[in-house]
Image (cartoon, rainbow, N blue to C red; front, side, top):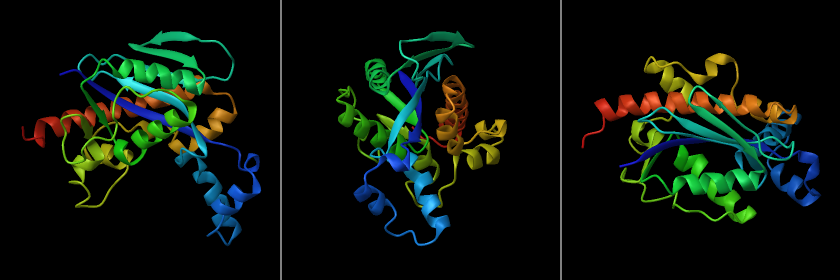
Length: 223
């Protein structure tokens, strides 16, 4: 069975670019300036107020992969480094690249994919008319198609959820956050034009997810 790990990075639109009705809706429950600022920072979490700026894919059996990323410079750039191909394009183009690549895999592995990456990708694809080639939201309680490690390691919500960084540190795995970048920094890097830096950060998440998957598969996955 061919397998792939994938992860996405997102960046929210500028709050001021939204019309008044949407601004009011997003700030409906924010009363203090701090709460309003927090609401604005969460724009990157919603497919209706954000874009996919990078999609990373890693084959857990070969450790080779690709990151499709936005660069806003026009055209397509490709560079390879340490077994990873970095390929740029528009958001629509990187979604198209992703769906074409997904045709080759029978099973996909994520960390919190069901709660974030998968619905985000499906919704953005519908908005941009990029045709999906896989159902990223199959039956929740089966790992035949989708192994969401957050679901598996919390026993489908029976115990508290923790971040990838927290799980990595508990399992003795190098955390991608140790390099000083977190998901909150992605919109900042994107607005600064640090597109390849975002793509390389995405690789760190892929590698950490792969190592966590190996541990789960060897010690927890009863086949």
